[in-house]
Length: 339
Image (cartoon, rainbow, N blue to C red):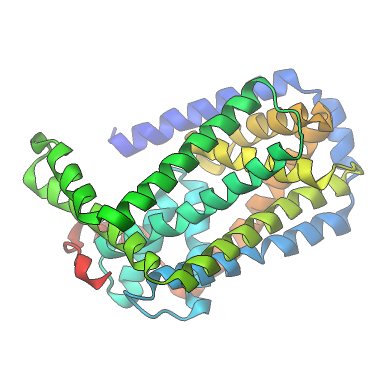
């Protein structure tokens, strides 16, 4: 068994374990009754609203890619939809790689050059989520036990991120030199060059953004807007179940929920979505059955939306995942100067 297959198998077992634990804790009959009474118009409204954020994130990634390649917004939007489906089905960061593979297929952009832009782009999602979580906590919401730990972990990630970006802007070459010294030689010269090339691209991406403050501000605004709209989908799911949940509770719960995706999940995030979502929103006072019902409803809606939109995007792009992933082995070394 390959390392990748073993990792997927382990994540699948973890997801099934979480799903079984979740099913033993929640009242499934009550969850079934809640779901049976869900308002279909509000659920459909949530599905339509969820289609807005891929456009915002596509516009953001286009700004990061600007120094490397000019790609039409509609094409970046399709790439994002297709890669989201890949990441949902194979949650081992395959979605990020799929974005780079698609750019290589369509624009001959080396994976090693585009992959750092994906990391830069995704870091703004985490930044927006942590801002929302901190805002919710400052409004006086009571966060105890595990939720407080998750928030503190998110805060630590945020501080590390800020420190890293500042260091990159003021001392990019020193950061790279330090990484070069710390990276073990036993990895082999070829792998070391590839890893250092990816790091150089990441550092160059943040440095390039620091020279474009207008783009930087726009990216943060797009990220916050996308996060708030995503949280709005959760609000609509609660409303469809007849639950009146304060908006700040939804925003804070959404932020904490997204942070849990740091934990590796099973294909389709089966188990982890249910377990973590029910724990977080239940602890925020929505009630265990309501929280579990909302998460199940969101999970099902998300799977349908991703399947339809991602599948259509793959067809429109002519994306062959098997052929594209095979082409990754032939990817040339990055050219950091392009950033």
